[in-house]
Image (cartoon, rainbow, N blue to C red; front, top):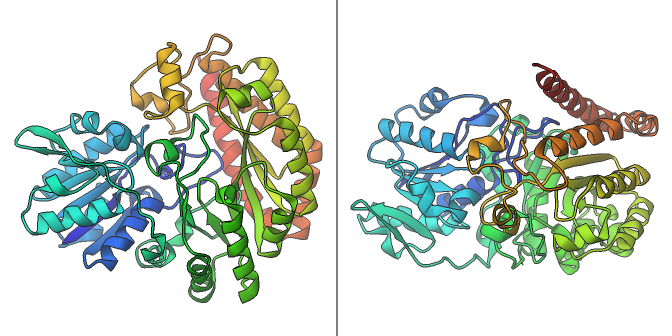
Length: 487
Protein backbone atom coordinates (compact mmCIF):
# COMPACT_ATOMS: atom_id res chain seq x y z
CA UNK A 1 0.00 0.00 0.00
CA UNK A 2 1.10 3.58 -0.67
CA UNK A 3 1.35 5.48 2.63
CA UNK A 4 2.01 9.19 3.02
CA UNK A 5 3.48 10.20 6.39
CA UNK A 6 2.82 13.92 6.67
CA UNK A 7 4.00 16.60 9.04
CA UNK A 8 1.38 19.05 7.80
CA UNK A 9 1.91 22.72 6.99
CA UNK A 10 1.24 25.19 9.76
CA UNK A 11 3.38 28.10 10.92
CA UNK A 12 6.87 28.37 9.48
CA UNK A 13 9.35 26.22 11.43
CA UNK A 14 6.63 24.95 13.77
CA UNK A 15 8.28 22.18 15.80
CA UNK A 16 5.41 19.69 16.08
CA UNK A 17 7.54 16.79 17.36
CA UNK A 18 8.85 18.77 20.33
CA UNK A 19 7.48 17.91 23.78
CA UNK A 20 6.10 21.46 23.83
CA UNK A 21 5.16 22.11 20.19
CA UNK A 22 5.64 25.69 19.00
CA UNK A 23 7.86 27.97 16.97
CA UNK A 24 10.93 28.06 19.21
CA UNK A 25 12.54 31.37 20.18
CA UNK A 26 15.99 29.88 19.68
CA UNK A 27 15.20 28.60 16.19
CA UNK A 28 14.97 24.92 17.16
CA UNK A 29 13.16 22.67 14.70
CA UNK A 30 12.83 19.00 15.61
CA UNK A 31 12.92 16.15 13.14
CA UNK A 32 9.53 14.43 12.69
CA UNK A 33 10.90 11.61 14.86
CA UNK A 34 7.85 9.44 15.37
CA UNK A 35 6.60 9.79 11.80
CA UNK A 36 10.05 8.77 10.58
CA UNK A 37 10.23 5.69 12.81
CA UNK A 38 6.76 4.59 11.71
CA UNK A 39 7.57 5.26 8.05
CA UNK A 40 10.74 3.19 8.36
CA UNK A 41 8.94 0.22 9.85
CA UNK A 42 6.15 0.36 7.25
CA UNK A 43 8.74 0.51 4.48
CA UNK A 44 10.67 -2.43 5.95
CA UNK A 45 7.46 -4.46 6.10
CA UNK A 46 6.69 -4.01 2.42
CA UNK A 47 4.71 -0.81 2.02
CA UNK A 48 5.64 2.09 -0.25
CA UNK A 49 6.08 5.25 1.81
CA UNK A 50 6.66 8.95 1.41
CA UNK A 51 7.66 11.18 4.35
CA UNK A 52 6.97 14.88 3.85
CA UNK A 53 7.79 17.60 6.39
CA UNK A 54 6.03 20.80 5.33
CA UNK A 55 7.18 23.09 8.21
CA UNK A 56 10.82 22.18 7.59
CA UNK A 57 10.45 22.87 3.87
CA UNK A 58 8.41 26.01 4.60
CA UNK A 59 5.75 25.04 2.09
CA UNK A 60 1.99 24.56 2.06
CA UNK A 61 -0.18 21.91 0.45
CA UNK A 62 0.74 23.10 -3.04
CA UNK A 63 4.33 22.14 -2.24
CA UNK A 64 3.17 18.73 -1.06
CA UNK A 65 1.12 18.10 -4.19
CA UNK A 66 3.99 19.19 -6.43
CA UNK A 67 6.33 16.80 -4.60
CA UNK A 68 3.91 13.86 -4.91
CA UNK A 69 3.24 14.41 -8.61
CA UNK A 70 1.14 11.49 -9.87
CA UNK A 71 1.78 9.42 -6.74
CA UNK A 72 -1.55 8.64 -5.05
CA UNK A 73 -1.52 7.85 -1.31
CA UNK A 74 -4.02 5.27 -0.12
CA UNK A 75 -3.36 5.93 3.56
CA UNK A 76 -2.36 9.38 4.87
CA UNK A 77 -0.82 9.47 8.36
CA UNK A 78 -1.04 13.03 9.67
CA UNK A 79 0.99 14.14 12.67
CA UNK A 80 -0.75 16.51 15.07
CA UNK A 81 -0.22 18.44 18.29
CA UNK A 82 -2.43 20.20 20.80
CA UNK A 83 -1.67 23.76 19.62
CA UNK A 84 -2.11 22.88 15.94
CA UNK A 85 -4.96 20.35 16.09
CA UNK A 86 -7.68 22.66 14.73
CA UNK A 87 -5.50 23.66 11.79
CA UNK A 88 -4.31 20.07 11.26
CA UNK A 89 -7.89 18.86 10.89
CA UNK A 90 -8.60 21.63 8.38
CA UNK A 91 -5.54 20.56 6.38
CA UNK A 92 -6.71 16.94 6.56
CA UNK A 93 -10.13 17.89 5.17
CA UNK A 94 -8.43 19.63 2.23
CA UNK A 95 -6.26 16.57 1.58
CA UNK A 96 -9.40 14.42 1.60
CA UNK A 97 -10.79 16.51 -1.24
CA UNK A 98 -7.60 15.91 -3.20
CA UNK A 99 -7.41 12.17 -2.41
CA UNK A 100 -11.02 11.15 -1.63
CA UNK A 101 -10.27 7.42 -1.59
CA UNK A 102 -7.44 7.74 0.95
CA UNK A 103 -7.91 6.78 4.60
CA UNK A 104 -6.95 9.75 6.80
CA UNK A 105 -5.37 8.82 10.14
CA UNK A 106 -4.44 11.35 12.84
CA UNK A 107 -1.50 10.47 15.10
CA UNK A 108 0.28 12.10 18.01
CA UNK A 109 -0.21 12.89 21.68
CA UNK A 110 -3.34 15.00 21.24
CA UNK A 111 -5.49 12.42 19.41
CA UNK A 112 -4.09 9.77 21.76
CA UNK A 113 -5.54 11.71 24.70
CA UNK A 114 -8.79 12.77 22.97
CA UNK A 115 -9.50 10.23 20.20
CA UNK A 116 -13.29 10.58 19.99
CA UNK A 117 -13.14 14.36 20.25
CA UNK A 118 -10.66 14.50 17.36
CA UNK A 119 -12.88 12.32 15.18
CA UNK A 120 -15.76 14.67 15.86
CA UNK A 121 -13.81 17.69 14.60
CA UNK A 122 -14.48 16.82 10.95
CA UNK A 123 -16.17 14.04 9.01
CA UNK A 124 -13.12 13.75 6.72
CA UNK A 125 -11.09 12.17 9.52
CA UNK A 126 -11.39 8.41 9.12
CA UNK A 127 -9.41 7.30 12.15
CA UNK A 128 -7.16 8.15 15.06
CA UNK A 129 -4.20 6.13 16.34
CA UNK A 130 -3.94 5.94 20.12
CA UNK A 131 -0.42 5.92 21.54
CA UNK A 132 2.55 4.41 19.69
CA UNK A 133 1.27 3.93 16.18
CA UNK A 134 4.03 2.17 14.24
CA UNK A 135 2.34 -1.25 14.09
CA UNK A 136 -1.12 0.35 14.08
CA UNK A 137 -0.28 1.94 10.73
CA UNK A 138 1.19 -1.29 9.33
CA UNK A 139 -1.80 -3.40 10.37
CA UNK A 140 -4.30 -0.78 9.22
CA UNK A 141 -2.60 -0.60 5.82
CA UNK A 142 -2.77 -4.37 5.52
CA UNK A 143 -6.45 -4.42 6.47
CA UNK A 144 -7.30 -1.68 3.98
CA UNK A 145 -5.28 -3.41 1.27
CA UNK A 146 -7.37 -6.54 1.74
CA UNK A 147 -10.65 -4.61 2.07
CA UNK A 148 -11.02 -5.80 5.67
CA UNK A 149 -12.60 -3.95 8.57
CA UNK A 150 -10.14 -2.12 10.89
CA UNK A 151 -12.00 -3.59 13.86
CA UNK A 152 -9.17 -6.02 14.61
CA UNK A 153 -6.44 -3.36 14.42
CA UNK A 154 -5.47 -2.55 18.02
CA UNK A 155 -4.83 1.02 19.13
CA UNK A 156 -7.38 2.62 16.84
CA UNK A 157 -10.52 4.74 16.97
CA UNK A 158 -12.30 4.98 13.62
CA UNK A 159 -15.49 5.98 11.91
CA UNK A 160 -17.66 3.45 10.11
CA UNK A 161 -21.30 3.79 9.04
CA UNK A 162 -21.50 7.14 10.84
CA UNK A 163 -20.51 5.49 14.11
CA UNK A 164 -17.26 5.72 16.07
CA UNK A 165 -15.59 2.48 17.16
CA UNK A 166 -12.62 2.01 19.46
CA UNK A 167 -10.51 -1.12 19.23
CA UNK A 168 -8.46 -2.92 21.88
CA UNK A 169 -5.50 -1.19 23.49
CA UNK A 170 -2.24 -1.82 21.66
CA UNK A 171 0.66 -3.41 23.50
CA UNK A 172 3.87 -1.40 23.52
CA UNK A 173 6.65 -2.53 21.20
CA UNK A 174 9.38 -4.26 23.21
CA UNK A 175 11.86 -5.10 20.44
CA UNK A 176 13.06 -1.69 19.29
CA UNK A 177 15.92 -3.22 17.31
CA UNK A 178 13.41 -4.24 14.64
CA UNK A 179 13.20 -0.65 13.38
CA UNK A 180 15.51 0.47 10.58
CA UNK A 181 17.86 3.29 11.53
CA UNK A 182 15.81 6.47 11.59
CA UNK A 183 18.83 8.33 10.22
CA UNK A 184 18.60 6.23 7.04
CA UNK A 185 14.94 7.32 6.73
CA UNK A 186 16.02 10.93 7.16
CA UNK A 187 18.61 10.45 4.43
CA UNK A 188 16.02 9.04 2.05
CA UNK A 189 13.21 11.52 2.65
CA UNK A 190 14.44 14.70 4.38
CA UNK A 191 17.10 17.38 4.10
CA UNK A 192 19.06 17.32 7.35
CA UNK A 193 20.16 20.92 6.84
CA UNK A 194 16.57 22.02 7.50
CA UNK A 195 16.74 21.00 11.16
CA UNK A 196 18.33 22.86 14.02
CA UNK A 197 18.62 22.47 17.78
CA UNK A 198 19.76 25.62 19.53
CA UNK A 199 21.99 23.75 22.01
CA UNK A 200 23.58 21.38 19.47
CA UNK A 201 26.25 21.72 16.80
CA UNK A 202 24.85 22.12 13.29
CA UNK A 203 23.95 20.08 11.33
CA UNK A 204 22.64 17.52 13.79
CA UNK A 205 20.51 14.38 13.81
CA UNK A 206 18.00 13.15 16.41
CA UNK A 207 17.48 9.50 17.34
CA UNK A 208 16.02 7.53 20.22
CA UNK A 209 17.63 4.66 22.11
CA UNK A 210 14.55 3.90 24.20
CA UNK A 211 10.86 4.68 24.57
CA UNK A 212 8.92 5.53 27.70
CA UNK A 213 10.06 6.96 31.03
CA UNK A 214 9.78 5.40 34.50
CA UNK A 215 9.55 8.76 36.25
CA UNK A 216 6.20 10.34 37.15
CA UNK A 217 6.60 14.09 36.59
CA UNK A 218 3.03 15.34 36.47
CA UNK A 219 3.48 17.62 33.45
CA UNK A 220 5.33 15.37 30.96
CA UNK A 221 3.02 14.39 28.12
CA UNK A 222 4.81 11.60 26.24
CA UNK A 223 5.09 9.06 29.09
CA UNK A 224 1.51 9.74 30.19
CA UNK A 225 -0.35 9.49 26.89
CA UNK A 226 2.00 8.01 24.30
CA UNK A 227 4.93 5.79 25.33
CA UNK A 228 3.95 4.81 28.90
CA UNK A 229 6.12 4.73 32.03
CA UNK A 230 7.86 1.54 30.96
CA UNK A 231 11.31 2.34 29.60
CA UNK A 232 12.14 -0.02 26.72
CA UNK A 233 15.55 0.21 25.10
CA UNK A 234 17.46 -0.73 21.99
CA UNK A 235 20.52 -2.93 22.38
CA UNK A 236 23.82 -1.11 22.75
CA UNK A 237 25.08 -2.82 19.60
CA UNK A 238 22.10 -1.55 17.59
CA UNK A 239 22.54 2.02 18.86
CA UNK A 240 26.27 2.12 18.16
CA UNK A 241 25.73 0.49 14.77
CA UNK A 242 23.62 3.55 13.94
CA UNK A 243 26.34 5.91 15.18
CA UNK A 244 28.74 4.07 12.88
CA UNK A 245 26.25 4.36 10.01
CA UNK A 246 26.04 8.12 10.58
CA UNK A 247 29.80 8.49 10.76
CA UNK A 248 30.31 6.56 7.53
CA UNK A 249 27.35 7.78 5.46
CA UNK A 250 26.52 11.25 6.76
CA UNK A 251 29.94 12.80 7.34
CA UNK A 252 28.55 16.34 7.44
CA UNK A 253 26.73 15.64 10.73
CA UNK A 254 28.34 17.45 13.68
CA UNK A 255 26.24 16.02 16.52
CA UNK A 256 23.67 13.35 17.38
CA UNK A 257 20.80 14.10 19.74
CA UNK A 258 19.52 11.21 21.87
CA UNK A 259 15.90 12.23 22.31
CA UNK A 260 14.75 9.63 24.83
CA UNK A 261 12.55 11.33 27.42
CA UNK A 262 15.26 10.45 29.94
CA UNK A 263 18.30 8.72 28.50
CA UNK A 264 19.82 8.29 31.96
CA UNK A 265 16.73 6.51 33.36
CA UNK A 266 18.69 3.27 33.03
CA UNK A 267 22.35 3.83 34.01
CA UNK A 268 23.27 0.32 32.81
CA UNK A 269 21.82 1.09 29.37
CA UNK A 270 23.95 4.25 29.23
CA UNK A 271 27.07 2.36 30.34
CA UNK A 272 26.63 -0.32 27.70
CA UNK A 273 26.27 2.26 24.94
CA UNK A 274 29.20 4.35 26.17
CA UNK A 275 31.50 1.35 26.49
CA UNK A 276 30.56 0.21 22.98
CA UNK A 277 31.18 3.70 21.55
CA UNK A 278 34.61 3.80 23.21
CA UNK A 279 35.48 0.25 22.14
CA UNK A 280 34.73 1.03 18.50
CA UNK A 281 36.48 4.39 18.55
CA UNK A 282 33.37 6.37 17.59
CA UNK A 283 34.11 10.07 18.16
CA UNK A 284 30.82 11.58 17.01
CA UNK A 285 29.62 14.15 19.61
CA UNK A 286 26.18 13.65 21.12
CA UNK A 287 23.74 15.19 23.59
CA UNK A 288 20.94 13.63 25.61
CA UNK A 289 18.05 14.36 27.96
CA UNK A 290 18.97 13.58 31.56
CA UNK A 291 17.82 13.95 35.16
CA UNK A 292 19.74 16.01 37.66
CA UNK A 293 20.85 12.91 39.56
CA UNK A 294 23.45 11.24 37.33
CA UNK A 295 26.36 9.82 39.32
CA UNK A 296 29.90 11.22 38.83
CA UNK A 297 31.39 8.02 37.40
CA UNK A 298 28.68 7.76 34.77
CA UNK A 299 29.06 11.44 33.81
CA UNK A 300 32.78 10.89 33.29
CA UNK A 301 32.15 7.77 31.20
CA UNK A 302 29.62 9.67 29.06
CA UNK A 303 32.19 12.39 28.47
CA UNK A 304 34.79 9.84 27.33
CA UNK A 305 32.21 8.33 24.97
CA UNK A 306 31.61 11.62 23.18
CA UNK A 307 28.78 13.19 25.17
CA UNK A 308 29.02 16.98 24.91
CA UNK A 309 25.80 18.24 26.48
CA UNK A 310 23.07 17.24 28.90
CA UNK A 311 19.58 18.73 28.70
CA UNK A 312 18.30 18.72 32.26
CA UNK A 313 14.81 19.57 33.47
CA UNK A 314 15.51 20.99 36.93
CA UNK A 315 12.04 22.65 36.85
CA UNK A 316 12.41 24.34 40.27
CA UNK A 317 14.87 25.06 43.07
CA UNK A 318 12.14 24.88 45.73
CA UNK A 319 11.70 21.49 47.37
CA UNK A 320 7.95 21.84 48.02
CA UNK A 321 7.39 22.70 44.35
CA UNK A 322 9.47 19.72 43.21
CA UNK A 323 7.47 17.45 45.49
CA UNK A 324 4.18 18.89 44.20
CA UNK A 325 5.05 17.95 40.62
CA UNK A 326 6.24 14.41 41.56
CA UNK A 327 9.76 15.17 40.41
CA UNK A 328 11.30 12.73 42.88
CA UNK A 329 14.52 14.74 43.34
CA UNK A 330 15.91 17.12 45.95
CA UNK A 331 17.74 20.42 45.91
CA UNK A 332 20.89 19.14 47.62
CA UNK A 333 21.11 16.46 44.96
CA UNK A 334 20.87 19.17 42.30
CA UNK A 335 23.77 21.04 43.87
CA UNK A 336 25.92 17.90 43.89
CA UNK A 337 25.00 17.28 40.27
CA UNK A 338 26.06 20.82 39.29
CA UNK A 339 29.48 20.19 40.84
CA UNK A 340 29.82 16.71 39.34
CA UNK A 341 28.78 17.63 35.80
CA UNK A 342 31.26 20.50 35.69
CA UNK A 343 34.05 18.29 36.98
CA UNK A 344 33.23 15.84 34.20
CA UNK A 345 33.60 18.66 31.64
CA UNK A 346 30.06 18.35 30.28
CA UNK A 347 27.91 21.26 29.19
CA UNK A 348 24.33 21.66 30.42
CA UNK A 349 21.20 23.21 28.94
CA UNK A 350 18.99 23.68 31.99
CA UNK A 351 15.22 24.04 32.10
CA UNK A 352 13.18 25.86 34.75
CA UNK A 353 9.39 25.88 34.84
CA UNK A 354 6.98 28.57 36.03
CA UNK A 355 3.48 27.90 37.40
CA UNK A 356 3.72 24.51 39.05
CA UNK A 357 1.74 23.77 42.23
CA UNK A 358 3.11 25.96 45.02
CA UNK A 359 4.97 28.36 42.73
CA UNK A 360 5.13 31.99 43.85
CA UNK A 361 7.33 34.92 42.90
CA UNK A 362 9.59 33.92 45.80
CA UNK A 363 10.03 30.29 44.69
CA UNK A 364 10.70 31.46 41.14
CA UNK A 365 13.30 33.96 42.34
CA UNK A 366 15.03 31.07 44.11
CA UNK A 367 14.99 29.03 40.91
CA UNK A 368 16.50 31.92 38.96
CA UNK A 369 19.22 32.36 41.57
CA UNK A 370 20.04 28.64 41.38
CA UNK A 371 20.41 28.98 37.60
CA UNK A 372 22.71 32.00 37.94
CA UNK A 373 24.92 30.22 40.47
CA UNK A 374 25.12 27.14 38.24
CA UNK A 375 26.00 29.33 35.21
CA UNK A 376 25.21 26.64 32.68
CA UNK A 377 25.81 26.89 28.95
CA UNK A 378 22.19 27.92 28.42
CA UNK A 379 18.96 28.10 30.40
CA UNK A 380 15.33 27.91 29.43
CA UNK A 381 12.53 29.44 31.51
CA UNK A 382 9.01 28.58 30.44
CA UNK A 383 5.47 28.43 31.84
CA UNK A 384 3.82 25.14 32.73
CA UNK A 385 2.37 23.90 29.44
CA UNK A 386 -0.87 21.97 29.85
CA UNK A 387 -1.67 19.07 27.54
CA UNK A 388 -4.77 16.83 27.62
CA UNK A 389 -4.13 13.46 29.19
CA UNK A 390 -1.62 14.73 31.77
CA UNK A 391 -2.04 15.14 35.51
CA UNK A 392 -1.08 18.79 35.06
CA UNK A 393 -3.98 19.39 32.67
CA UNK A 394 -6.46 17.76 35.06
CA UNK A 395 -5.00 19.65 38.03
CA UNK A 396 -5.47 22.99 36.28
CA UNK A 397 -8.90 22.18 34.90
CA UNK A 398 -10.33 20.82 38.15
CA UNK A 399 -9.23 23.91 40.08
CA UNK A 400 -10.44 26.40 37.53
CA UNK A 401 -6.90 27.52 36.62
CA UNK A 402 -7.24 26.59 32.92
CA UNK A 403 -8.21 29.78 31.09
CA UNK A 404 -9.65 28.12 27.98
CA UNK A 405 -10.10 24.82 26.19
CA UNK A 406 -9.72 26.52 22.81
CA UNK A 407 -6.48 24.84 21.77
CA UNK A 408 -5.66 27.55 19.24
CA UNK A 409 -4.85 29.71 22.28
CA UNK A 410 -1.89 27.49 23.20
CA UNK A 411 0.20 29.66 20.83
CA UNK A 412 0.64 33.35 20.18
CA UNK A 413 -0.20 34.66 16.72
CA UNK A 414 3.49 34.25 15.81
CA UNK A 415 3.39 30.60 16.86
CA UNK A 416 5.37 31.06 20.08
CA UNK A 417 4.35 29.33 23.29
CA UNK A 418 1.43 30.93 25.09
CA UNK A 419 0.36 30.45 28.69
CA UNK A 420 -3.26 29.43 29.37
CA UNK A 421 -2.79 29.00 33.11
CA UNK A 422 -3.93 31.37 35.88
CA UNK A 423 -3.13 30.39 39.46
CA UNK A 424 -4.07 32.34 42.61
CA UNK A 425 -0.42 33.39 42.93
CA UNK A 426 0.44 34.13 39.29
CA UNK A 427 -1.56 35.24 36.28
CA UNK A 428 -0.82 34.06 32.76
CA UNK A 429 0.70 37.46 31.96
CA UNK A 430 2.82 37.29 35.11
CA UNK A 431 4.24 33.94 34.03
CA UNK A 432 5.03 35.03 30.48
CA UNK A 433 6.65 38.26 31.68
CA UNK A 434 8.71 36.45 34.32
CA UNK A 435 9.97 33.90 31.80
CA UNK A 436 10.96 36.60 29.29
CA UNK A 437 12.62 38.61 32.04
CA UNK A 438 14.60 35.64 33.35
CA UNK A 439 15.64 34.63 29.84
CA UNK A 440 16.98 38.10 29.06
CA UNK A 441 18.66 38.60 32.43
CA UNK A 442 20.33 35.20 32.41
CA UNK A 443 21.76 35.42 28.91
CA UNK A 444 22.82 39.08 29.14
CA UNK A 445 24.86 38.74 32.35
CA UNK A 446 28.49 39.85 31.91
CA UNK A 447 29.73 36.58 33.43
CA UNK A 448 27.67 34.58 30.95
CA UNK A 449 28.72 36.68 27.94
CA UNK A 450 32.40 36.32 28.85
CA UNK A 451 31.94 32.55 29.18
CA UNK A 452 30.33 32.33 25.73
CA UNK A 453 32.99 34.52 24.11
CA UNK A 454 35.77 32.36 25.53
CA UNK A 455 33.86 29.26 24.46
CA UNK A 456 33.60 30.60 20.91
CA UNK A 457 37.31 31.40 20.79
CA UNK A 458 38.27 27.91 21.94
CA UNK A 459 35.73 26.19 19.69
CA UNK A 460 34.48 28.19 16.68
CA UNK A 461 31.63 25.72 16.02
CA UNK A 462 30.25 26.50 19.50
CA UNK A 463 30.46 30.18 18.68
CA UNK A 464 28.61 29.69 15.41
CA UNK A 465 25.88 27.66 17.13
CA UNK A 466 25.47 30.34 19.80
CA UNK A 467 25.28 33.09 17.19
CA UNK A 468 22.54 31.31 15.23
CA UNK A 469 20.50 30.68 18.35
CA UNK A 470 20.98 34.18 19.79
CA UNK A 471 19.93 35.84 16.54
CA UNK A 472 16.64 33.94 16.49
CA UNK A 473 16.07 34.23 20.25
CA UNK A 474 16.54 37.98 20.59
CA UNK A 475 14.62 38.65 17.40
CA UNK A 476 11.57 36.85 18.76
CA UNK A 477 11.93 38.46 22.18
CA UNK A 478 11.97 41.88 20.50
CA UNK A 479 8.85 41.02 18.48
CA UNK A 480 7.03 40.03 21.66
CA UNK A 481 8.13 43.16 23.48
CA UNK A 482 6.99 45.44 20.66
CA UNK A 483 3.66 43.66 20.37
CA UNK A 484 2.95 43.89 24.10
CA UNK A 485 3.85 47.57 24.05
CA UNK A 486 1.12 48.36 21.54
CA UNK A 487 -2.10 49.94 22.85
